[in-house]
Image (cartoon, rainbow, N blue to C red):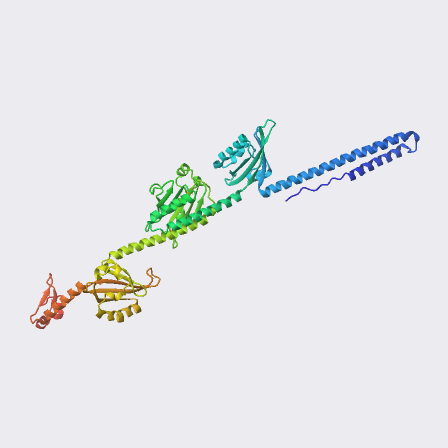
Length: 542
């Protein structure tokens, strides 16, 4: 902190110099005029001269002393002013005086620094001061000033100002009125303090608390057993409610698509059709750019933002700021969430917004996985073939409708039973001694085996048995595909019996298709003709 030079004015040296000058003058006078101090005619004159010299010296000393006091007072005032200005600079507080009748406004140097204006370029007046106030706060300031003047109350208000470069600051103003003899206010004295850092910290804390509340609510929503579209809609409503947003939206990127599709919307618009229902993933739009570069964005100048496609819409709804974040699953962007506000948003909101976006993305992934599993479960359930899974302990855990049709047992009856419970006794040893070891060794095995249904019927089934990994969604165990091949077995048996009958007859038999190509001959034909190999190839040769 700079200090004025400490100039101490001392009167005594000046007084002694004045006396020395007087003595020198008298010495020169006596020398050149030949006057004598012992001359009786001049004794009276010498007395008066001595008295005059003493009085003159006394007056001169008093003048010098007053000058010294004045100098010291000025120095102390200058020091006080410097300390005051330095204190105001450190505290970011300035003082002002407003002459109400003359409309003149005095600002201290610190106020000019706070408002980032130069005294020679800014004519301080009440109207000029109002012009610096943020448009959204101007009415509030005028209201508080009028209330103070009308009710003779102290003036106090927090408001924002606009700096020449377009940035904002928060000020805290207080003032007191001075009254004339008639009780009419003629002047207001006050201070203005820059509280931008304090307000910014308050806003950040407020936004963090909002985000924590939003995060908790969104997390709870994503655990509900409701459709994904409903959950995302509720998430948008929560953003509007907790973030004081005018509009909140979520776009998703469907598979095999290159555009963002509006999936949920709350606030100003709840419909999912319209101008912003489909947004291309490119840098021409704010939302598309967020998805393209996988980077969150905050904008506080929507009306002048080149990436805002419809500034008239922004102006119509008095939107000022927006924040958006990509939704990422396994390194892939699957959507964008964004909200729009009528108030300023700090850049620090990106961090808590990222947390909310991660939770939404995780919930979205879980819901999509659940939906895929439900679709697979429905497909498995509706398959004609039997699909059975077991726990690592070998007990049946899943039993689809195909298994119910094949074996006759319901899912409730089959669960927690060993996999071999539907085998007849004569197949049990074959299953345990040959099939299971092969599955354990190779991981899978296909075989045919006889089964026994609930009503005691014996049927034939084609089985495919595979071992599941521990990290599978079932958690280990076995998966079994079974198909009823009883009719095929019966057909094969009929063919075997027919062939046996043909082979046992003594007459030559030839079977052809519609094109007269031989498809079957018996042994008697071979013995008679000797062309068994040729005719088996489908060639008729006499």
